Length: 274
Image (tube, rainbow, N blue to C red; front, top):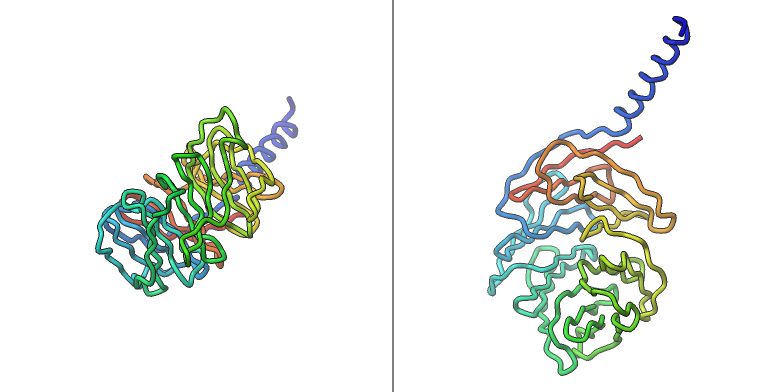
């Protein structure tokens, strides 16, 4: 191999490596230490909402400043917290079979207990755009929609009929753009419309939680990387994380900032992806 050819291959290699190294840049902005973190969510103003191990809730702005705190009368681990509606924050406790709605200042505004003759054990619950609640009833393996005003059932989706011979271990449930997304490991991501009709299935075994950002979902992969997947085209992009014992990742919606979550705190980065 002559000198020119070797040099050409070397320059191509250097260019390729440079592109790989410059493809993503993490800029550290602030590190915050907190009590033990159980669940996290983000609102449409990019505020991070944290449910701590004892059930306490705290809210931080995008600069890491503590805004508000809330301590429930009944202390229990929060099974799910959702802040995407921004005007209120939804929590669910499977231990107490109840949910709470908090306002922007983390004041309790409404409590809901899952007491109905047609409801067994509520294993999972999440809020809907219309102000009602979706639940997963473990007893009869159904998704039910409940009116928060009357406590009556609005809709029932029999998962055991739709997915027969399947271990229906629901890991996460979230309404987004008038679609209900369910993570069921043996199914993937099952997407239902607001009338309870299955509209699509997405092959997915990568995580037990997904966040939504524009036309993408994102999650922390088993390899410890941030993965971003298009909701409609299903194209995936993998982003290597900075070194750290990260347990979850939350992407801001109005900027390039990312919250990387540890057991007792979080770090705010700016992420630039070419």
